[in-house]
Length: 131
Image 1 (cartoon, helix red, strand yellow):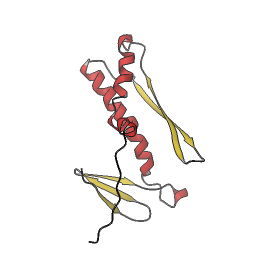
Image 2: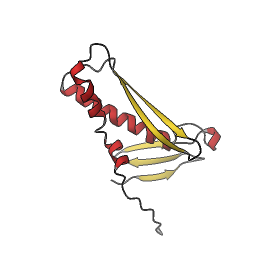
Image 3: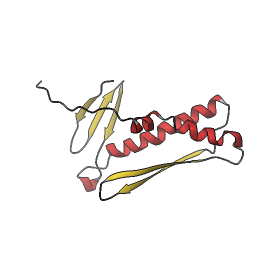
Image 4: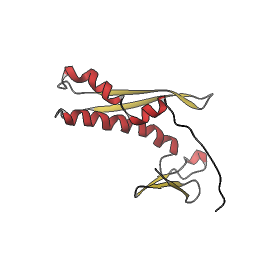
């Protein structure tokens, strides 16, 4: 997959791919306009939304209503290292959610491709080229 990254103005940066444009910005404390999520916020959101799509697919395949299901993501931050040390995904289900599927719902969330990439990270290579 190829993405084109563009520098817009001030601290805004976009990623263009597959007909989409994802806009990022920095908070005002970081010199930005706070007009869009910061890249790291989108990274964290990708974990929760990825787990969410696997939960949604699980429920849809079994015709389990998703109304009342809520996924809450929390992150523990190490201010010394400036890194997230733990991400917790809490799946809240309504009382009528089938008991026999509760553990399977956790297993479905754990299939998230973003999460799996964190467990087996890709190699990164940064290069420069003259235009």
